[in-house]
Image 1 (cartoon, rainbow, N blue to C red):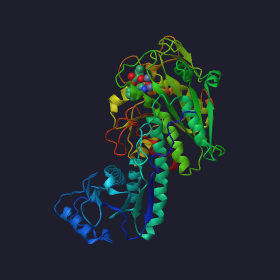
Image 2: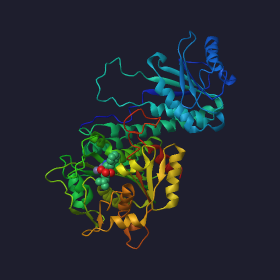
Image 3: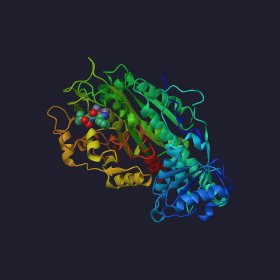
Image 4: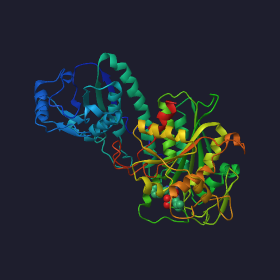
Length: 510
Ligand code: BES
Ligand code: ZN
Ligand code: ZN
């Protein structure tokens, strides 16, 4: 097995401890509210006089206004180094501001600050303090597996001490541990996405999932390989992946599988590279299509977050892995295929491949008696046209469920914006002259909506009962948010790992 990544390691070079002591170790980090003109009294404990006067001078002169996400380093004084961090106005501060401030502080850390830090908060609840730590942990990520590194250059472990009162310590420590686990999931999703496509292909993803599951007693991974996929009738997955020398597979994760009853089922689009196939993409930015497995990375990362935080409920995840290549034996525009559902699909454009692999993943999901199904996919350029890089497109066959996901996203500051699943779009995707469905809309408009409407055709009814009710389902198009989001404060560059936190929140708060 080729392995370009060691999951969960990025971000592990930071130790966060909780302390009620007055001592200041290393560089002092001071999150402050806008308008403050001197060090708040509750922060003064243990501060050397020189440090205190240096900070007070900067605040009194208005040189640091504590605007949201602002930072300022004071490194000249003999009494130690300080990073001032802005939280904005105290009247409207939220956990998101604390998280962003933590991330901004982490991004501003230079060698000169050393490796020891003490954070001292003013007027902050335990949730706020934990969010600040979460921001630091999330931002503590860089993908440099492929860069030559000197021994000395390797990052030394950073020690971060969060100071709080004695009675807050236990609760803070529990929350920080939870965020540490979730961050591992986010970083795993980012590692998977950032890995170059020559080293990240379906079999590698499957091997990684297999190895990963060995670490946990309560997780099982099943791999449906190419031959098995053909036998099982996974015509969508096979049609997309057959033109590549790296054959497709489906990877199924089951957590706490012995628990009885319904469970969430997550489904991921995992195109490890999308050339467009015979409907070849133009050359510009084609390299970015290595991120086209972002849906599967989200799902794998979410399972890691759930496992790391000791989730006790049952959860299933299905990742549909394939590489979309042009080849003599690749699927052609005009081909008609049949997948697991038994419905036929007229393939009018081989670049609309995500929906083909998902058609099998969604149908397969029905086997696990889902409470609900959510799929994640870098599905359409049209979604990026509609929402830019600021929000994920969110569709559902259940308005309340869509609202629930939207709210889970808001709770962790990962926007998922409601989009319409209209009957007209379904009609457009089912009026093929020759098959039950077509993988391309009739015109150029509304491409993200027609894609969602296509997926809906493959969401099974409960117990596959022809006359039954369709299982509650949502589709999240992360084409604009899985990478390239410059305004995401938790991310410097590359894959974002978006929605691991949203779905962890959704599943664990239900
Ligand atoms: N993976 C792409 C979608 C994509 C494009 C994501 C650009 C992020 C940035 C997907 O497989 C695709 O190519 N979709 C086509 C669909 C079209 C042929 C109906 C698209 O969006 O152009
Ligand atoms: Zn494509
Ligand atoms: Zn694609």
